[in-house]
Length: 228
Ligand code: CA
Image 1 (tube, protein in one colour):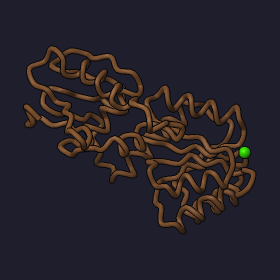
Image 2 (cartoon, rainbow, N blue to C red; image 1 turned 90 degrees about the vertical axis):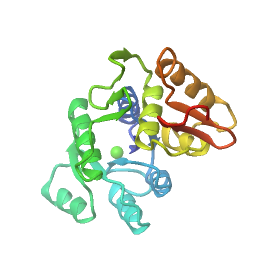
Image 3 (cartoon, protein in one colour; image 1 turned 135 degrees about the horizontal axis):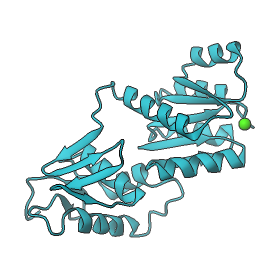
Image 4 (cartoon, rainbow, N blue to C red; image 1 turned 30 degrees about the horizontal axis):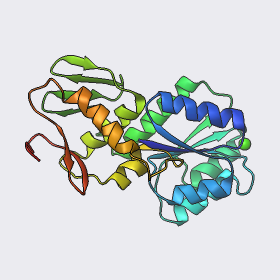
């Protein structure tokens, strides 16, 4: 799951990016309204965390621009101003939730998870399964055939993507845009290395292979693809 943070205060921005990354999300950080709007219009984000007071465009203008561009990414507003008028203005523009600074990271994380679930119709399972593999999104835990598997945050995000899109061949470029942040250098073989490591943990020593390479195309997670 990929989150865009638009926050000009360096400390808060870095704190959010680090915390969300540690919680297993992929996070990009924009430090002003213009960059935030450009990135948001890209449309690859599952959620935006938007500060109100920003240089360039303020948070409301960013949200307005995002919605005008037809991007429906849910938005959580961060504001130091908790006046009723501000809340009403943001909600009228299509913000999905509010958090008043200063906030506890645990609360932010809870709101983020709620918004992400709601964004998918509220019916989103919190445990993704295929064959004897289970990925528990809330407990951040992977289990195969009853055995717990330790994954890095990146491996977890990669496996989550493969599970959500199981049966679908995912090109490297798509994997890069959904699992890596905007500073990712696509000329490297980082994705292949990450998939190889993930596969060693998920598939080695188990009866069937789940993660497959489709030559010239990308990767797919599938139960019925032996020999592919
Ligand atoms: Ca600010």
